[in-house]
Length: 585
Image (cartoon, rainbow, N blue to C red; front, top):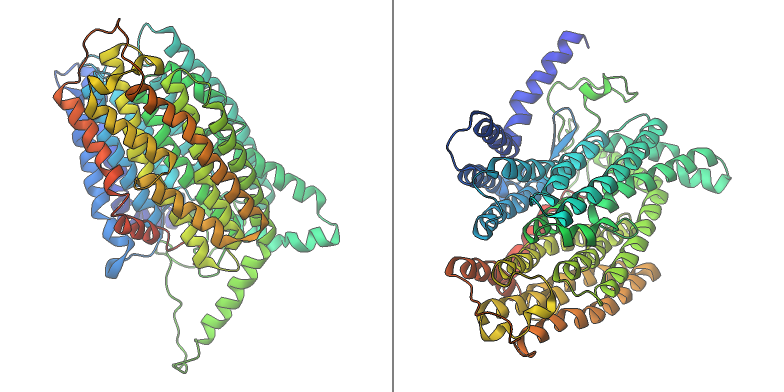
């Protein structure tokens, strides 16, 4: 292919295929540019309305793609922007969740007064910039995009943690967050360089094929290739450092409690919900991308290969996508698949089998981190007196819960791909429920802060007497976070536990027992908050306090899905399963 032909191919791919599938993210980009122009030219426009409209437009564009993940309009995954990003059902679902959360978050910051008119353009530019990075995390298909997306989401978050002016704790939180983030990013980038150097590619599907070609199982059995295996293991561990940092998973959770205590409750909601959802989606991208390969899968795009990588270049001129194999031979018998599909199936099986050691390593790594994270988060939450620190450890524990289905999926990916899809679907379903649970919790904390001027749990004593509606909503959310029926959190945890049971094996049953014990442990510190608000006497020093109509309405609207999805959850659960239907295909 000539250089001019390469440019024509890139232009055609970008304009005809990539841009139309990237419209929600482009809506965020346009909104950010417009708000920066407002700041530069000092236009008298309230940035809140720009951010709200821009995120709402992005959400509408994302919702318009939802029919493509199920039913008759279901679309095949497509690699866009030369294979750096993939458009598939997970991308559609996760960016819808992220943009929906962005709309709710922008409304919350207006109600709490965090984003004033003067600093609004800066604040909302950071929020939408981080949201854009998180959308890219959910659709990354190349290790360079993995790193860029993580940094796009992280750098604005460092600033958001210290957005409150004149507050030393906020500045300390931002400094700690940025220092830990810089260290994790450096380690992750070095791990990416090791993996790309050994496999001669950073394109995830191509890397999976290269790993399969190495036949690690045979090398291990023969006692050969020790250096190569060590470099791959070290690179995988280093990449996991960056993912664990975004998930606030042990032992890379150090930043989380201090940052959550120093930052505002609204920013904590953003970090605990959107950042965690995107990080979990990215964990699935990396784990499945490196641990599962298929000859029916896409190959590395021409533009990437032409940049100097040693992947085979085919003669396709259209963007690569999942398509059915073309059969020119005579029609096979009704009970006999076409010869080409038989060959493809055999090739698929050999590729999947060859990646067995990779999946085993990743499953064990994810399972151990999930178990430790879940246990540490619940135990550390016991002694917390600050509600934000308690919820910080709660988010650490829930990160452990939500990582468990990924390990289960990797364990059964070869023997039962349908069960593997169900496991990832359980995680995606729980993420959807977690949006409302954690957003509602931190929203109530923010509103209480404005009314009571405190964030200590003991100062919530007797609130049931003055603010009964919000106390009831807070109790519903906390019970849902425990995982008790009939709240949505029970259904989410049930699906996760079911995925572990169906995966079977000593490792998954051990994870199930650990998750069950931790659920019982979490009863104590969640119910303690409810006990303080409802049973403890109201302090004599407290001045009369009440919540205005709009904040109370917001709390009720965010809490309602926690109740409703605990009973009528089938549609959302089915949509979550449809969102992962292309995995392990």
